[in-house]
Length: 320
Image (cartoon, rainbow, N blue to C red; front, side, top):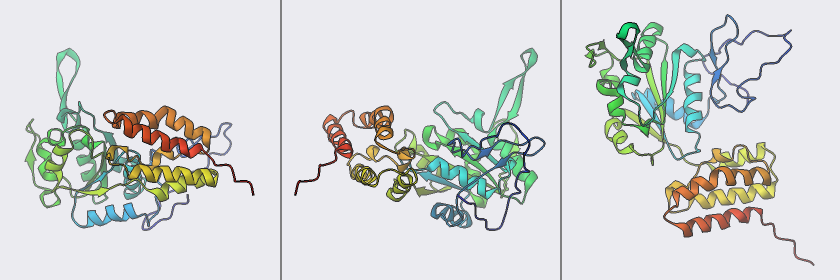
């Protein structure tokens, strides 16, 4: 997809003609991260393909303009949350890697992993070390007034109140630049030019704590399974029109199920091309996810399996 620009245009990398081996890009390999391998003696760059008129991008920009210091992309698995967070961050920083940072929360994540913590040195000594938040705060001050972005994937996998600690209060834009002290005594203030982008599955454990701690500090965008994006994937992959229509019908059926965990997103089908790839998708991913969601409702799982198998049942034309 071509990259249209409004306002900024990152420099293109110089040609690497003359080499015997062509270096593949992340996009050519099917990787969704915006990180691009740096060329020799060149700073690392971030690439993006999201167009300027993308509705999600426009909503994020509008929320930042409304005074929110962070935005959470919230939705079930497969709704492109991580892709959007990475793409929007890369675009906001104009491809400058030092202005963006990407990390993922997990159940054992702690304050010492995110803000600051003591790390061992030689002779049994310990040194206080900056972690992700402090690193980005210092980078934002050094690079001001340029915008910097910290991307947190899977925000609801842990308790953000515990991980952010004292800094949680100062995520609000009206409290930026107010000095406060961390548990170690380190003095800190949140820069005005630092923004946060996060993703979360609202059904993940710990989401209640996320809502209570951040409902006034982060705005939320609901990311829903998108039938139009599914159709776009199948068309791009040149799937037979009849088969694609039946896949879309199954997808539509899942969105109407009573159990919200069954409403999988469009990205599950991003590589579906034909019956063989659909069979593998079911046998090695979808079946396991849905069986877990419906472990207490075997009858519902049987209904879903029948609807899935209907994708492959093509009625013979009636004789005239």
